[in-house]
Image (cartoon, rainbow, N blue to C red; front, side):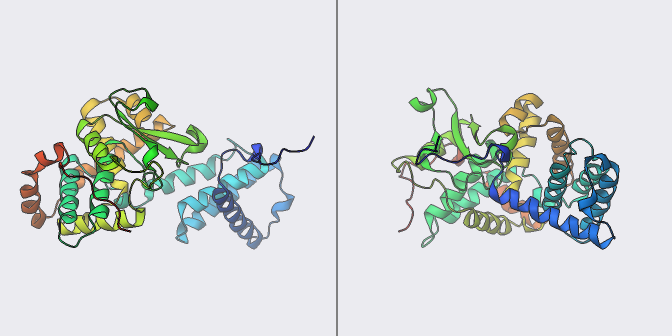
Length: 332
């Protein structure tokens, strides 16, 4: 029986892995084969019954990759590819221990968490830049709304990048059955293999919901909801530097880490936090919180920034709701 025209071909054996992810696995495995060959071993002679030897070689290779300044992600993809090739799931303890140690040894500053105080200051800085004469108001205010939603919604960096207006459901929207929370649909999230190809961000913060409603009002369903990730990242870093926070290396990744820590400190509920943040493994979340709490406590705000931040804190009440004027539109 032939396949009907127009029916999407789905490779069930590939699972939910993207072509790009599979390519990274092939590249990682190729590097490992080269590593093995240089040590006088032919990997084609291995089979699933030689798990211990393969594990030893993989652990040595992970060490080599670490010392060669390769990326943890690419190396992990290589270990996964070899594991799949020889059907060695749960039989590579040394290799995965090496990966876990590498993960702990990584510099953490790119994920330094924002606390709620600094988060609000950065949002106000973005809103201020949007009101500057000649500025692209859509870009700056769009970045501000994204930063608001990203923090309370525990969004991963880039998850809001391809979002469309139709992916945003607000209280009263019949598509989500009313309710009091906003729902933002995430397409192809990072952990889609564990938790599904499509996931959602839930937002209950009333002020942030008001800003989202203001931002999407009157816009077309298939219009891009927010500015490009690269532009948002640039605006975020510019304002952080303007406030004197450049040395703290905050990035858009600081929204998720900061939001998670703030949520835990307020509610002390790991199960709820795991669900809202879409962590598939509670152990990962627990480790994540330990690290972010450490970063919170060791973060030293530069003395030259304290006065600027204090002045902005007097305007926090302005974040309770958006202005009455219509949100700016994207420049043609």
